[in-house]
Length: 135
Ligand SMILES: [Zn+2]
Image (cartoon, rainbow, N blue to C red):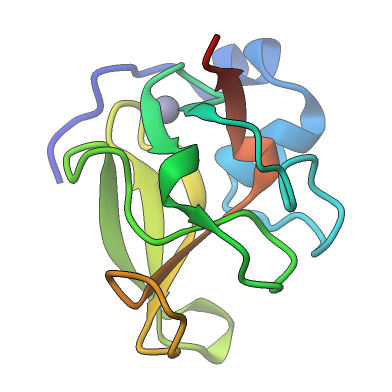
């Protein structure tokens, strides 16, 4: 994994982010399900990384997964995110990171049978995203 383009120290991230944002984005936390502000959002627009502002996902790839977190079947661009094996918590999962600043975003699951073009579910914490509605 190459170095992120946006590189800050933990202290600098703490100044830029709220404690809740820091815990998820920089410490790979998870917001409780059904609490995030974008879980059921259908507004058209672009979802940016809340840490660095990079474009990550689009509303056109968002779908209703009923899992409690915003779910996308594809990133806006395959270069927008980095995928990394995550064996924490006794599970084999694939972590999703922002390619631009390497902040934690969530996990990606596949083969769950959702009727989407990719059969993948990018399960992303709302607190890692910032929706910019298209005008
Ligand atoms: Zn970022």
